[in-house]
Image 1 (cartoon, rainbow, N blue to C red):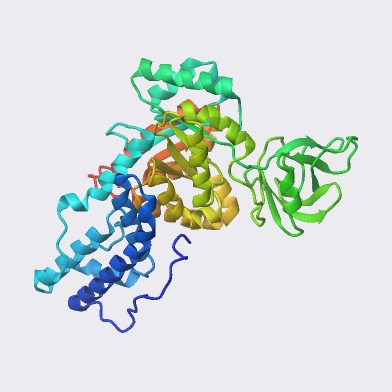
Image 2: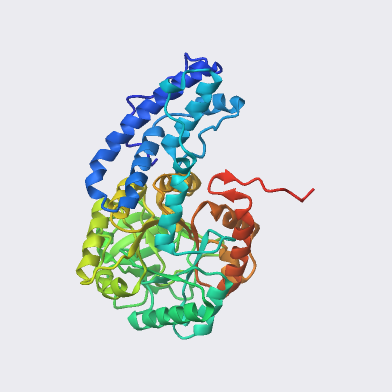
Amino acid sequence: MVFSTLEQDQELDYSTLDLSNPCVLLETLQKLRQIVFQDGQDIFNPWCSRIQRQVFLSSGLNLAHYMALRRHDLRPLQTALVPWGLSSLGRLEARVMPSLDAVIATLGAICQVNPASLPSRPAIQEFLEGDRLLHQQTEDVLGQTTAERQVRIMVTLPTEAASDDSFVRDLLQRGTNCVRINCAHDNVDLWEAMIGNVRRAEKETGHSCKVLMDLAGPKPRLGQVIAPKHKHRILQGECLLLTHDLPGSKDTTCFQATCTLPEVLDRLQVGETAWIDDGRIGARVEALTDQGVLLRITHASLKGSKLRPEKGLNFPDTDLQLSPLTAKDRQDLEFVATHADIVGYSFVQSADDIKLLQQELAARMPQPREIAIMAKIETPQAVSNLPELMVQVAGQQPFAVMIARGDLAIAIGYQRLAEIQEEILWLCEAAHIPVIWATQVLENLVKKGIPSRAEMTDAAMAQQAECVMLNKGPFVAEAVTMLDDVLTRMQAHQLKKTPQLRALHSW
């Protein structure tokens, strides 16, 4: 859990308190406020020297207060506040101290306590400052959008975007606010052509569009794949031999494949888990051989699954000890540093990883310009270190977080994805940092032209983020149109965690 590293030495004990008594409730809230204020300051003080952007100073302090607050189980207080018609503190992420002060001031009036003994009631402007900062920092990274739809739409560009300017123009006309170029694919010439088409489309349509260039990072993938004769799919119970190099002979009794990062094979141990192709194929390390690592397939389609080159490999049980910046990433940064609006950072796990990217960017930008960083949260380490990541980046330049739900689900377990996704959203809102909701959004619609019922609900829930990313596919333009409609409709119903009670006309 994001907040588990904090000490638990001042946990409030509600067991002996009659919280139905408003005066006891008031006293408890005042004690909580005192603890949160002091503990938040203790968290914030070591961050101050790293925060160079004035806009993030108050955001960093609010983040520290939120982390201090969430050390405590607030459920008894929430239950006790509701009968008095007061805020249950369930939507205070962007404004921790003003929310506590507002509740305490009103409860003090109910208890007829001298206002001079209570914190001052926050002014409306102070109460709404967190929302303003989140809006500002979102625009700093993702640009402006329309009042009708505050949540941005991002689209991953396919190779055809380099040669078909009408395709890019159509995306912008349908509502795309940002495009993503995946540096794991294509090349510099194609990237330059894609960006040129985006800039022309901006001028022709009058719609602005940010360019995110996503560094590939140290992602192990299947290289060349060799199948046994007359076999096209691998079945549960069969074996896959991952090798540094394929043997000279292609006569084989089991599937074989090279790994694009062969050094990771030396770090695997018997019994550890492996996942292939975004979790579609599961395996366990059965043996370490002179040729490589023998995997026993534990999960596959009933009719077998295809092993294709370039499909991702995940080893959630293994510390792969890989730098988040590969030699290819450093080479790609020569282009990215001068062409992208946002740099996507894959498999980032610590503040030191962020420093490394900042140094590499600075070395390639003799004339400094403001370039945003987007960190992809896809490992348990990145989740645990998220506060430090945010301070290191947002303290110096515009910053956004992408919840990379594909790799993250594999790393933490599918059953925890929804829980951790919510925690990331809360923590980022507390720091007034925009979030990009990614991986398999409207996937069936993008790939097949017809959405599933479940993914429509998922797309609607993405209203909690500041941006939603669509992957490439033959029907991605149609998906932009549908997502634009869904997000526009949902804006009338929900803002972040807060329901919007517009008039209902269904009955």
